Length: 292
Ligand code: DC
Image (cartoon, rainbow, N blue to C red):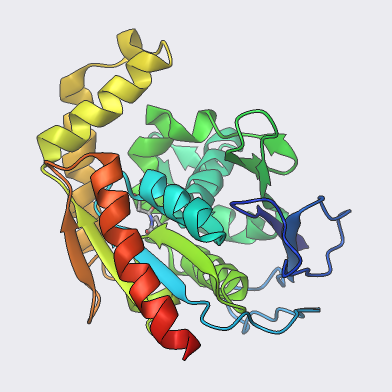
């Protein structure tokens, strides 16, 4: 009954690298931690015994929460930002996608309907991990030890993930894990509820958005570049983007909204570099202020 999450640092592990005890062999240069979740997590309070040997929090380190619409480049921006600042990066959406893939593979979806109780009863079997690919230097997502990074980006998962993300029991577990990762600050996390629920006190909160058509085109180009453009049409992707916006913003639990104090970044007409420069400037200003 263990859910393990391992998170690779965005940059190589420096002397200030935080080390968490884990029941898996720790990966070199990684932050790793384990979460013990009772099978009856739905009814009982989730207990998370944490064994933390964290070193002194580096002066000035902050939490950067990035929320926003799907496919607007949050993850890309968050990764680049983390790399630039030497911070950890966590893609919270990948965690919900991993749960969705588990549900798909384990017959917990029947004719498009989630079999809620069965999924909740099996949450304890799901181990989500992150590890940095030594060749691409990108964080990749693991489900019970298997690299699922590609599969969780495909339409079967994308079409269902918003529904899985509305399940309170799933969210409770994910949020607790995410908060643990940010315990020592120095982290960039992207998602839908990072600035509102996971880290409402984050020093820097950003809300990213772009026009739906532009977001769909970006995702389509991405799939085409991976040789998967022929499997899906632009219209299908646009429909998926709009559907997810609707679900993410209208759901009862932790709906996507602009967190108090968040800065809005509409990147419809911005290059990645322009966005990065803009955000790094904001972050450095706060980090500098925090260090005083
Ligand atoms: O960022 P993404 O598209 O990979 O997210 C996948 C889904 O997970 C998306 O429909 C919204 C949901 N999600 C969420 O509810 N809360 C988060 N913190 C991150 C993602």
